[in-house]
Length: 361
Image (cartoon, rainbow, N blue to C red; front, top):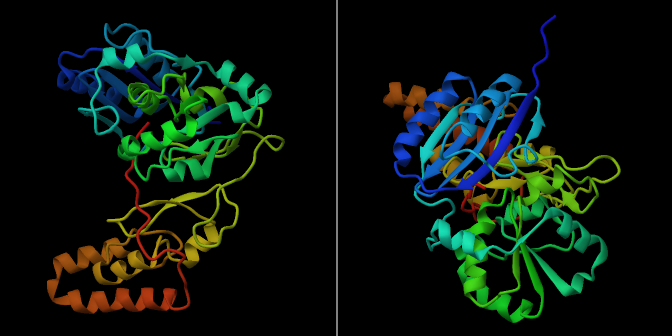
């Protein structure tokens, strides 16, 4: 009998001065690839952000590599933010250079981020939610809209930014609405709040805190129902179940029907690729398109991703058109006819693409 392997997902970041990030990218990629890990790692001049999966041996080897590296040792919360998974959650191992850890529109140095401070522990947040008057504080969700809609902390309010880059435009509203309250901002793993806290404090909101370790640290420690819904994650799971039969609450609403759901998918029109919260049956009946606009574009551009519920093999047809240009018109007619038949009685709640900027945390 084959021995069952136990896998973990590690997610962490660290602000540190990196003299030669490109060289570190190459070294990191070589090591992680050689030991068989999979995941996505970004390295910049002042930081590293990593989300990887591996079995027990691979994770142990990777942590030894980090501990024995001058730059990467002493990673905060690396164990408490680790999650058990049933296998690799990424298709490959990627390590890339990225100039800015989170695209805010403004760059902040490592020292500026560290000087902002004002960290709130998960213990303090739990005590606040459980025991304090919700009118005395604001829990500000700094993630993208679809992440908030899938799941968030009890009493939390969205940042009201279609994309994270637009945070600065909202600050005047925050000052007007929250001037007399304690503001606690949070994100998935903590990265976004490192920078957003600097921006909020510089704007005059001094009673501003960031949740230390982010949502991941909280839900890996407490199963108390203070997190509502699922957690959007940046790996193949997409939607991570939070809680159990006693503490889990589904709050996501299907894009098409408003049914309660914990499921996330992508719009099948590749140039859109919007992340959408959907009921599985509704998603299939709408052929996986987020809007009437995307369904119409798909008819014209045939840039549709293959899915098991759709018998049409679009990739194969695209290859056939490339190899036999004289068949293009015939193949396009075949695809249009197929989609027209599937969508003739379907109505969409949204006319335009639901695409948002995608920010890794």
